[in-house]
Image (cartoon, rainbow, N blue to C red; front, side, top):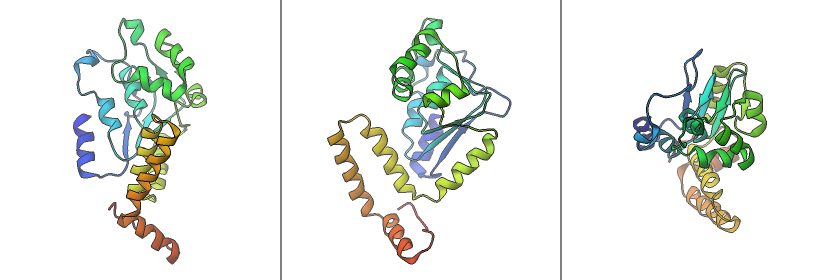
Length: 211
């Protein structure tokens, strides 16, 4: 996982990374090793990918698997998906960011029920809480749809928007607004921004190069 994410960062391709389990299997039902022994952790590697990371989840998504999913930008699931963080029941703590990312996604009160009691959450509850972005009857078709839509967006704009959301959420509003302005200035100097403007005035689809 860490090597894959590193290669994506270095090549800057593909613009979108998809993580999913094999059909009919669990996304992560458990592990047979101590996650603290695996450093750098895979969730941290996923979080450093510049472009969007889409996670497609079916079956049980538990413990370190959920921590990896939380590091993704979009979490799609089907009706079979269940989410749990059972570390405390095993006498340990999440160590791939679960105690920090889960409250930021679902709120502190909801995260507490999962982190302290190991409460399992079904797909519809995950959707209501914001843990899942959509519950889909056909995950493959849903992923393809997301990829098709994201393919029409400028890759640099995607990367900068992701940076603005993640970095800005940790900043006071005034600093977040300055970050947005700085990123806009950077984007304005790129070929992609020039192509976007040219395509708008020419009334044609843009042909972004990622530069």
